[in-house]
Image (cartoon, rainbow, N blue to C red; front, top):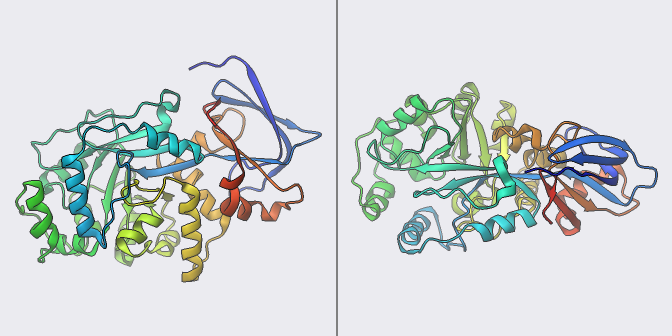
Length: 380
């Protein structure tokens, strides 16, 4: 993709990243996909330019909410959905994401693998090709990120093989999403083997026992700097220590976690150990929409109730630069010359002081979203 014309946009405030102070009265210039310059803007409009949102975990193939009172009934309905549905396009969900200010995502792509259809996204749409079953199952080419679905949905032999052979590739794994997952790895009676396996045509398989799903995956060599632990709800101090030691990143999906796991997860444990934390929406199967803004607000309100120390800037960082770091797309959310021109513009009240900018964007930014740019192309 090539755009030869240099473009400019002025703003009252420019946020290069959320852990840095905003810059005032700036004209941002870009050419093609790259930012060229940042110059003074003598008469700035009441607008703020901010990094685009990064959805680290999304299932784009779900077109609607799958209603269930808890995790196991939900999984049963997901299996029925996957068996019954015709091949559906993910394009509507991709468009919904972009209209909500998402400029990149990590999507879980079920077999047979279809990686999406929006050409201007380029490498900003990161497809994690899903793997389930045993060593006879289809395995994606080595050039793609993969998603070994969960500790219970792959044989230990396949998990060990992927951990060994795909160590240098991004891997997203659903981890500690339900207490039944813990019962599974401990070898205790559980509805995953008793109720879910028969629906998929599988029999319970021998596997090593472990104290927790995190320890189970670690024993099989599946955890490392390129591993993304998704959900991570039922995680304790020992698990957090393992994740930190193995340099694993964590992605939480606040609304989906609350819907299916009744908790967001132990965020302070991750923060104390400086584990990278990104945000995801999960799919429409477990979430009412694909808005990262609503995920961030859900997290903010939950954190207030738990009395966690979590500033608006920290939450916005999770939804932007931390997510980009986890997906290895660091150039996406650093709005400086030479970096990628993927950003949002938001109309703001003229009198808004800089110290109130982050709360305004977190709680009301989507109400005033003006434009979305991805790789220099205006898409909204």
